[in-house]
Amino acid sequence: MAKKETHHSLRELTRIKPGEKVDLAKFDCGEAFGRQKEEADEVLAANLTRLTDLQTRIYAEAKHAVLIVLQGIDAAGKDGTIRVIAGAFNPQGTPVTSFKEPTPIELAHDFLWRVHAAVPGKGQIGIFNRSHYEQVLIVRVHKLEPEEQWRRHYGEIRDWELMLTQEGVTILKFFLAIDKDTQRERFQERVDDPTKRWKFSLSDVAERKFWDQYRAAFEEMLAETSTDYAPWHLIPANRNWLRNLAVSEIVADAIDELNPQFPEPAAGIEGIKVV
Image 1 (tube, one colour):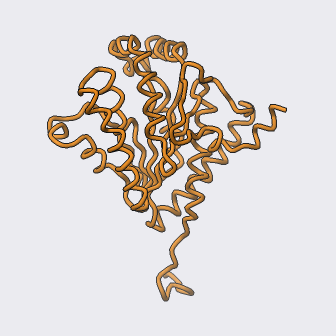
Image 2 (spheres, rainbow, N blue to C red):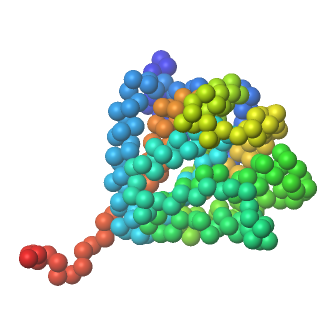
């Protein structure tokens, strides 16, 4: 009977309803939704082929903008997801923005100032590696703002995302969920592998001490900011193959609904012979 679950789209299986409470302590980060690893490579390849075609159409039509937001604790797989998904796209139409610690100039403005500037324009599929949500995550955990202030950001984020969608931006938000043991294993792999050691920092170990605080922040963020117009998708990310399969399918299905079309050619091109 479990096999029947494969008939349900990953988009629906992972979508968080507005106001839905998520208990990440009980969430199965190794869930596969009935999918099989043996079949995943073939399905992923098909998804990426779809994405290549869809991104070409989005770029040519220059009518729609798509924003992909990736959040997750350190080592959740944000970079790996970007390598796979963005690998299907023409870089000209796919800006990727990684939000680091704000600069002095950025701190002199509201927290959405630098984020708004990175929102993709029409014809583009933009990807955020971390995002405006850090303002209710790291800011909360490390008490960088008073609680009254960071709590106010939930409403500001909802309003801002609503404005973007009304202006024609499709927002796809993915929270990549891994468990604490998986994070430890991935950190250790970085330490042990000379080609990955550059990705590891002693601060990564220090941040693990805040695991429970981050979990509480993630849970509230998901409940407060998953909306009908910009829902969160909770992706079990212990298995890289399932993570890539889910994100690629959800992105492809969402863009397909936009029905992007190649524009009509300029008048007079028909029948021209180029010499």
